[in-house]
Image: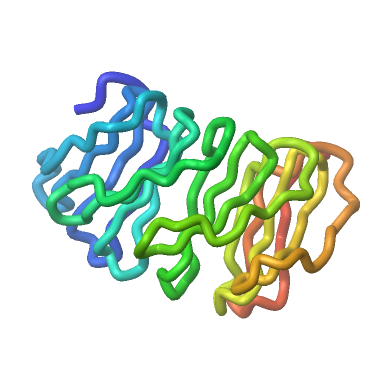
Length: 193
């Protein structure tokens, strides 16, 4: 198994494979029935902070403290692409519900939107003044919310990446954002109690 802390796990949508990301700089794919390790995915040069499956289950994305995102084939474990552009640790990644766009966010105070097939950076979303800690796609994929250590939540157009507005009111770091399933309300969690 892993040789250091496991930071993130995610089930492939069909429930047959579990992906895990670790401080040992690797991603592993595990058989969902037997628990056997199917593949050890190597290539990151620092801790893997988060893993997320594309909705079709064909690609696993991983974000790392080596400032990169990697896209892995969900069956073979082969690295398909390395997405470079962040200038500090990638905290996490999230697929838009249609699987066409991947968001990554980082300690470099930005969110990046990547084409889910080519890996091309579509847009860099700047405006937060401290680390971005959480991002959530509205269920229809039309709006992206981001929460930051600058105590704010920002909303972005989920297709163009255009800035929509800043939600203020927290008095400490915003560490989590999540949309209600109907997409009408965004919740945010902060260290401000």
